[in-house]
Image 1 (cartoon, rainbow, N blue to C red):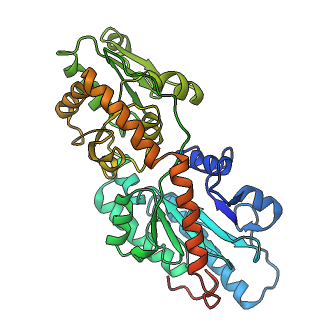
Image 2: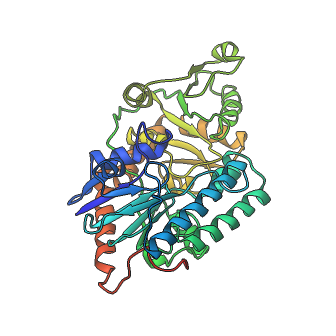
Image 3: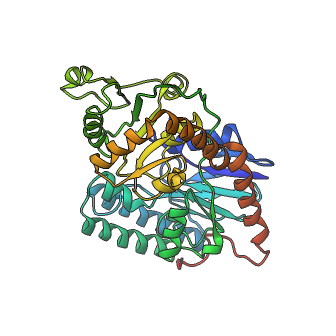
Length: 403
């Protein structure tokens, strides 16, 4: 099965966790699947991106191609509105796919118009776009709602497969969590029968035996505020009143001005750690990962911690309770509640309890997020997309503008 993977690529697209998802699939494809990434397809000419890498020609074209060019020009105008802040900032892509090349096209994160496409389209996503603007970037709900309305109307009128608000043109929709699948079904984005819940998968971690005296708490985040960093510091200060032996290791965020003072309170700060060092040397030393996030889809640092058998003290944001097995692999506290987080950290530092949670965290990872558990599900999703498509099904994105 040959699958065109249109998903963020390193050194081409903005650095993000979705690049890790791309690399994971390319390095470890599902059984029976051969991927071609979209950059390779562009080089071969089996995929053409209009506008950014190859502009629409001025030569005289048949009427249907002229319509495509007109829609592209309209899309360029909308992108100017994005830059002004009136709409969401992520631009749409405009692709032509060579017929007969692929069994499936898998579109992840990007929103795009694909014309033509003679094979099934699978779209995957981790979180609604509005959550990023409202929860991570603190834009007013009224402004975000306006952007959602214009994004939906524009995408449907132009035949764009928008990954949050216009996905009806997809044959299958991959949601990384049950929480997101329920959101899509609730908002009428797609028939629930077309949704597959298939999470990100990663390789096994480096678990270690539980200690007789667990004391080390880890916190990993580039965006210190959005991931609940201030709440972690406040909760840790409360925890130290009853657990003066506790230690907090903060990784990935710039140190604050009072980092020297924090160091005297057993807070170690690592602004940057290479990924291999993080996975092999730091995470395996944690007894708990504190992660009271205020914005997330399916965070890799949580999966990487679970892969090492590290229980997670997280928040009740979106799918986070689901990700830790609703208490099986960690604890859940309300967003921005330092008191409850401190109680949960103290609870998980109990030696007997910590040993039990470490084992449960590893088992939860192996059954839910390990490659051997996830990749067959994704292969099955592709097969369903192929099997459910009939010869009478029209080519995607070549018909009228109604989504």
